[in-house]
Image (cartoon, rainbow, N blue to C red; front, side, top):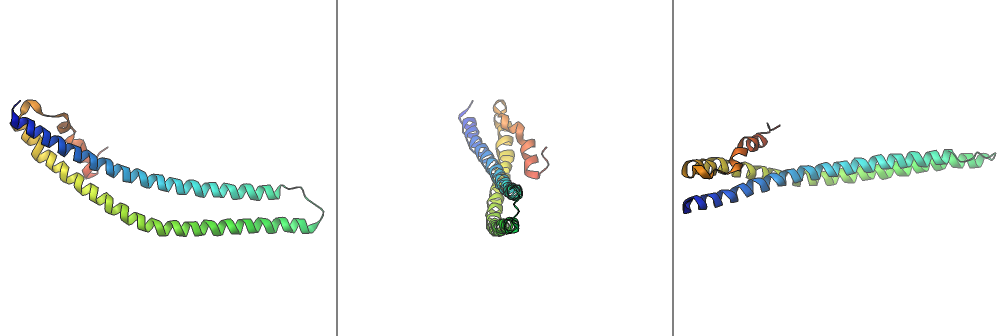
Length: 159
């Protein structure tokens, strides 16, 4: 292998690393958003089950003949429901406000990585793989065979 082929292979390796770095960054952003939404749903479901369990435990207390205790039980149940509802509503409002800010940052970051991914993919396809095929036919790296899959990811048609 000549010196020019080695230099070309090294340059193409750096471009390939950039392609996969931006691809992994895009996937990390997507998985981070999924984990955040999953956590919010888990917290909401856990809160609902806690309220149901609390109300059920209040209702399962042994009945007393004294009506003031019965009224107190229902008042306590309504108060617990109101407090949990207010906390959940406030929590949802806060999350919604913060998610707007986070969504803008995520979109900006994701677009930056996506545009860089497409740019480096074009460099990899147009410069590296085509130059390696013509200048060093015996040195065509395996990542040149991954180009259709990478282009499918860039176009959104990859399965």
